[in-house]
Length: 186
Image (cartoon, rainbow, N blue to C red; front, side, top):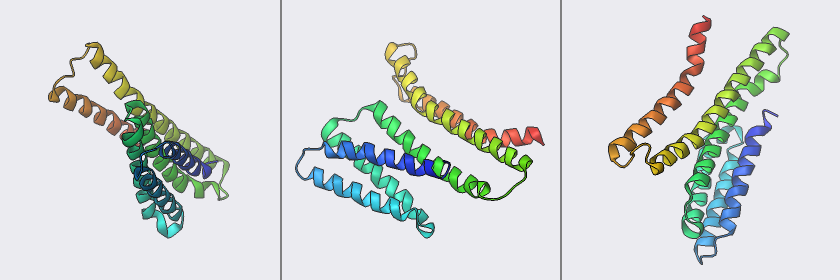
């Protein structure tokens, strides 16, 4: 299941982008976006080959460009779906990293105690990933709702920079959480 999660998330991203690209009816753009999506698919497949790993990121960039291009040309850019798409792309990258890090550990024979520690470490990593994914979607939506309601006057560049800075601090704390936990256990 761990090794299948990155592939499943990538298939989900491609299906989502393909539906949006297929809905483009603007002459010239439909073929261009379909070609970009196809090239992204080829690059993503090459990225699964052990030596082709750096190419996988180009595939994700092409996939994102096809999605954004289709939204801009035909549908209009809705913030919430775009935010969810980008978050799913980031989650895909993290799932791939988790599969590469923990996959080989599950393929070996290890003691019951070591297997328990591996399971706990993977559970903590997945929990951080879920929390970060939820925060990546919910915090900007909540901040926008507060700004629209007038509860937080986010009408200036300064307040927008402070809000973005707060989001960066939250993301940094989530990233540093494993290190802080390791110091406490030592």
